Length: 392
Ligand code: ATP
Ligand code: MG
Image 1 (cartoon, rainbow, N blue to C red):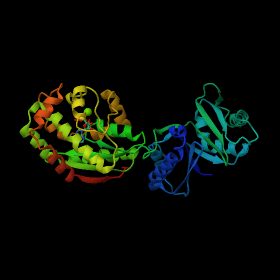
Image 2 (image 1 turned 135 degrees about the horizontal axis):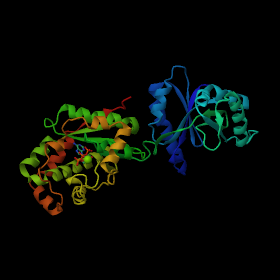
Image 3 (image 1 turned 60 degrees about the vertical axis):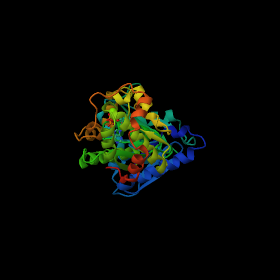
């Protein structure tokens, strides 16, 4: 039999009545993600997904990496299937894992028997296969307590499978089981990480980007689209809604006191995002804010920004340090793009001395200088959707 993948489902197995819906999503997400790599047969049985290439020209390495970014998978193994006999299992171990066993100082065999009709217990299988491999590889010691390499044998309903140690999957829940959120996506380090974290909980993303051309360049917008393409490798296809924000920023600058610029701008972002979220069927907003990171992210500032919206605002980074956020950004591959040096709309209009303890009353008073409803409506009308597909 060909090489194939066994993917262990994560939290899905804890679901009761919803389990079928969750599994259906996982199946269709995997089917879509694997499509560029050839034809694969994907089957879900109990808590495992079996992924088998259906032709010789499948790109197994590409498919393997793609699977590692599909939410809902807790652990994954590349394996070889074989007949359910000791002979066939031994031959599969030798042919498929021989190099690894040869290179290791010590090894052991661990077996699982899902097919209770199989005439040997799992301990007997391990002993038998371990004995045969020990004869075949006399220079590798058997060590059942602390082996350098472990050979896994799984005897299941149709076939047996042999593999080495599993690697962790992307975790979380299958994309699409948790509804949709509107992610406020800037070009920075934080918001792509926030999107990834909410996406991991099974939520589909609609991204909203506030664009202040010509204060920020076309390249700054391209950078944001690139970040979305990288996020899409985990979170699935999405749309970036590019909101024209220049007029609003100029109005704020002309009519409001400087120390309030950022907060008023953020309140405008939230109002527009909420209007877009409703149109797009999103049940929440998501931002990359982290408590105390900058003046506009103090508790008072968050209270003031929250006051303009009624949808829940998800802030998955709220308790994380910058270093922790950067670790995730590196892991998901957004960091390098995030630190490219193009201006963001916020940096262009940053006040020299922003208010860190604003009162809601003060803000509401200074905002009276703006035609808020008309500005929000025009921004929503002028928004352009850009469809995003995952970058391979
Ligand atoms: P990030 O690192 O995500 O760019 P930041 O450190 O620049 O965030 P702020 O400018 O205070 O922090 O922005 C806080 C949050 O507001 C961002 O995480 C993002 O969710 C949202 N946001 C900021 N600027 C924009 C923008 N131009 N378009 C869309 N959302 C934005
Ligand atoms: Mg930030």
